[in-house]
Structures are given as C-alpha cells and as structure tokens.
Length: 272
Length: 119
Image 1: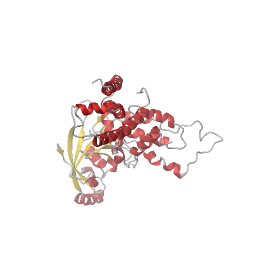
Image 2 (image 1 turned 90 degrees about the vertical axis):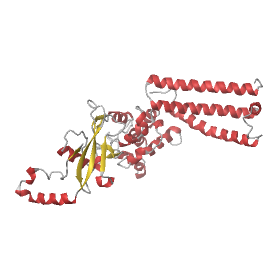
Image 3 (image 1 turned 30 degrees about the vertical axis):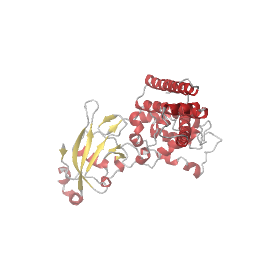
C-alpha cells in the first residue's frame, strides 16, 4: 500500500496556509518543497493480539539532509496513519527509546539520518529478540529484569554519604576502566543484534553483562564476587560466542564484547 | 538455573581438554608419519600392533578421554542454547555425561583388550 505525502510536514494544511500572516511560512514551504527529496518509508505493522503475520505499509515521505528516520516515522504518524505504534522520547540518543531495525540493522531512529542510509527505500521493523507490543514498539521486561539481576549499583558496606566519611575519590585511570560502560542508555540494540539472544531465551545478554563489568571494574565497588556468581551459570557469560555485533551497533560507543572478555578473565583466573 | 559445578570450572576443563588434545593429536599424526607405512596404518595388524605399544596405547587413551570430554561438553552447550527448561536442561546435561562415560568406557575396553592381546 502506498500513501501520499508529497508535501513536507505542516505545509500542506489549509489552516496554516490560509492565514495572510503566514506568508513567510508559505515562502519557506516553497523553498523546502523545491529542495527536498523523497524516500519510500516501509513501516512494519503487527499487532500480536490481532494479526497472524507482519505486513508493511509504504509511504512516500519528503526528507532533508537533517531528517532522521524518527522524523519520517512521526511525519507519517501525524499526517497519514495515527495508528502506527512507536516508542520515542528525547530525540537526541539519550533516552534509548526508539531502537528499531532500520534497513536490516539495529539503530536508534532519532540518531539515524535518512541521508546517511544511502537508499531510496527505508524499511523499519521492531527490534529482534524482543517481544513486539505493536508495530515498532517492543517489550523491555526481559532486558530490565536481567539488568536488575546483575545488581547495577555500587555495593559496599560503608557509604560516602554517612557522617564522618568523605567521597570516594578515583583517579582518571580508575574512571577510565569503566566509564565507557557507564554510557549505556539501555536501548537494547546490543541485545537485538546478539545471535545468542535469538535462540537462548534465558541468556543474560550483552547489555546485562556489560553492566556487570561496569560495576566490577569500578574500584569503589565491593560486589565483584556476587556479580561473578550471577553471571557464571549455564545461560550466563559462557553463552557469548564473541560475534561482536553488540559492539558494532551500540550508538553510545560501548563495547560489550570487550567487557564480556574482561569478565571471562576474572572467571578464568587471569584477571584479578 | 544452577549447575552441579560452576560453569567457569566446566569451561576451564573445556578449554584445557581442547589444548591438550591438540598436542596429543600432533604426536599421533607424527607417529603415523614416522613409524611404518602411512598407507597401511589402518590395516588390522598395524592397528593391533599400535595398541600393543604401551606408550602409544596411553596416547590413544588420553586422546579418547580428552576428545570425549570436550566433544560432549560442546554438544551440551549447543543443545542448551537451542532450547531451555529445567527438565530439558537436566536431561541434556545428564545425557551428555552418560554418553561421555559410556564412550570412554567402551573405547578404553577396546584399547585395554587389544593391548593385552585379547583380540
């Protein structure tokens, strides 16, 4: 199914264009219209409560150099099909809400410019290895529960906020050991790209394992043994085949595959 | 889901058996190339003669144990990744363990009988 969409968002509405005071908008519209290109946006539609299989809706959408995939999806949602299910929030790769499969690769829709995809057709699908709630929105319950399981907080008996103690100072070298792993925004792209997650429904996954390393590598933390025990089980760290796809897709530059290898070092005894 | 022993200990055994087995296989291949005719190495008399050499029988027994342990643990890992569930996982774990013991026992019996001249 192909739906319209030859005009840029907002400009085609009579309420906007009819007002004489909007002559500036009209000019801007003409300028944008003449300079914009179009792509065919294919959006996956699937409601597990009603549908037997996934279908794709196609829309012709104008875009500019700076238009992101999320902008295009919202353009369609606002003007052509309000029923499209998509999760988003910050629009600046910080909240981790808009992860999806874009032209076959897990990416953040708000962080992916259409012009960078180098394709006239952009296909968006829900992330792999997550249950679909509807269309592009997936359930994060499993990822959040494994994230909680690895105890993602500093474990120690004393506290830096109790009276008579000072904050726990760290050298830049101490911080360097874990800081990239602290950038995780829990978008789930690494879990979506992981081949083990596709078959093993109880695998902790690269997100949880990377976060386990983040806290184990933090010299303020004393929960290393607790966490190593959690990940050292049948569906724990040993399920990783080191495909490395988790690290390739992370939009924040986290390297979960490296964290997993570091954790293996602790468990095999060549790291202390 | 908890294992009988820690998974890291199983994996240490897994990696170690692979490394040591490679060493024994190299020795085995070198013996085949340096002792007697390689083309005739699978003839009945040649095989029985190998077993009667005690050091070589020990090499073969070591290879049998190392490759069985490594192979059946690898199979267990693959099967556990394909499907999950407590009953299934226990069946796979104990099944692989039993198959490994059975293969080692049967292979050892063959090596011992052949080296003692019982075949």
